[in-house]
Image (tube, rainbow, N blue to C red):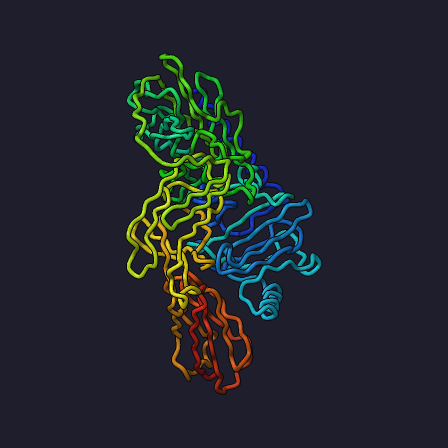
Length: 569
């Protein structure tokens, strides 16, 4: 065990010394994008449901408006503004071929703001994706380029920072020692799972053993079980829940690498150095479901599913499956390491002898690499090849439809089974009144009973949609227009106010678009979906006169709501 202690100490001290040397240099190729102490709320490679987190989230002391600086010489290559995703985002191309990305910004510098505003008015759209000429906004290292914010799909004030290589893959900037943060805390092993693998009709069927207790041993090591060998079946694999933390913050993070040995022979390796955005959804094959769903910690599968092409695995034997054909005791060692070299080892013995009752499962075999179509009782489900991470036994069930629905409620397989790509769901709507066809969609009912739109349209007697989720679905209609609530009284004096705003919302299909006019001219309203608010910031001189304001909001089913009023400014 002392061997692991010295290994941990060497890696941690070595990483600390390297970062110290880099930060002591007068001018590194990259500098920090902020000039406040760097504490993180997220790191590269976190399992974020349907994707890997592609950058580091830098805390901004709980406020917006912190200056953001270019990390190296280059030019602004892209500017994106959206109510979703990265919100206000800036991309800077650098001379060495990399691109730095700054997301969830509150605003850009005045010259960039002016350019963006001109393009928004030209396109009559708040959302824009711009690629300015490289000569328009050149920058040098340390130039002020923006201010931190909380825009887009952000849960609080912070700066999302990425560094992408020449192929636009997100780099693990901490593992590559491009950036550094205080981190002397080894990962903590929380839970060990064992998953049996049996086969029914050519489809793998799993039984997950209840949580195997894990306790801390000496140094940086953990032990599993009660000290006796953990009983395993003749065929199965392990999954591990890991809590990774860093100095100065209570957040949990993703892990960098996992290595597993059996009897000192390496059988599984995982390390995440880069993220390809075209394959980031395969994070669902890395995670162990359903245990990973809603878990703040990472739950990692120490096996490679058939439909998992990620290049993050190293020297994996038998895809991570452990097959024991003897009754001997074998020693398993799982080494977990974070980006700065802090390491923890879980050591335990295993032995054949776990009695497994193969669950009495039924269903229609669906092979992960083949197209599959299910059609029965008014429901058609098309599952294209490679939509699944492994083959399944497909099941469905029909229940009475919810009040206000126009079809039965169809339970389509298991909501806990993740999908890589879209499946197509079609539900018979031949008896739907013609006047409602343009308003029809497919709705889902969550495990909590909450109903939500899954989109879709009426076509040739069915309502059809694409989705990346199994679950319970039925036909619904949306005939209700959005709601508009002004934050002012018509005729109010705005001479001392800098903006005018509305709260807009929709009860089902969602806001599709909106257009605001002042004195008959289109004006820009910024959209904050988290607050259901749109805001226009005045950019014209005061006249002291009366101005007419109008707003039209439309949902995804074409239902429209209008507002007409006035204000004095």
